[in-house]
Length: 404
Image (cartoon, rainbow, N blue to C red):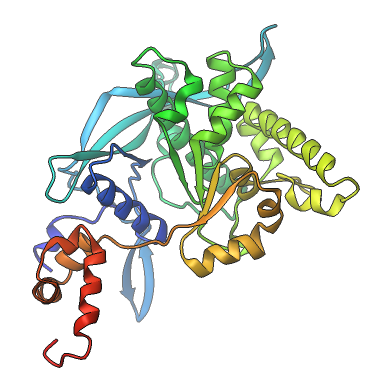
């Protein structure tokens, strides 16, 4: 415990999504596949638990207090991320201008494979202001205004899962999600364009797995980048986008599926809301032709949920904008098809599959339980099971052996 406490656990989330992402990266590296992991470099983790007067209390987990020896700050890899602002039609298309711009700065952590020279990269984004310090405000004695932009920007990468029960909390959550995907997509496109090839071939080199609905706004952001920044038309952009994305669903509880109010989206990301409306218009038009007169089905499958407050259904957007949707266990994947998205399954435009969330035997067997690992190696007569878990089926031949 004393040795372990010397190195703080990264405050990047250690629930189902974080565990899956960690195992994903370990497996990609071990299989010598050229994968990248992306996330936010949160300054404060979930929280640290203490017991005070027999009650649990939560305090901030400042896991970076002594720095992180594994990461490399990449001041040469930064991208601008815009919020708020307004739209202008420049005659050729829509231009998103004004608002506030923050910088996403990359921090890289190596992810080594097992018994391989291959090392992948986990690239985490840190939010910085476009302008560090307002000297004019400082000179006038308005010291808070001098650092206001810095404070506003750094909030984005401060806390993992900020409380979203308030309007300001919801706005911060959506800011985090867009900040993360905007920088990531700019990074992926920059790498792709190092070779002279059209972005309509992006899907031949780039496959993006959406880990639950949190990064779903990436579908809309890629559409914006292809159309507004690179001059492609709607059809080519949409075809490319759907070939790039896949969606992993983690829950079948309707109340756990993300929804954002259209009003908030219009204020924070006006161009994205415009694109979502157009995606939905085309989607509903197609459904109306296929299911004439079935208003209930169209209402269920719509990306926009009508009501007192119009909402964007991020799960529906993820399905419509991806070529494949998977659950994380056989039973769960069945419920995704029968209970959650039965209408989309019948529509047949998205492939629904099961992808059971395994754990990496390197970390969760060999490292976590070396004694059990040595027993397995002895009875299967090989250490290779750590990279090919199917070899453990050999244990079935010894299931009645008392020695085992």
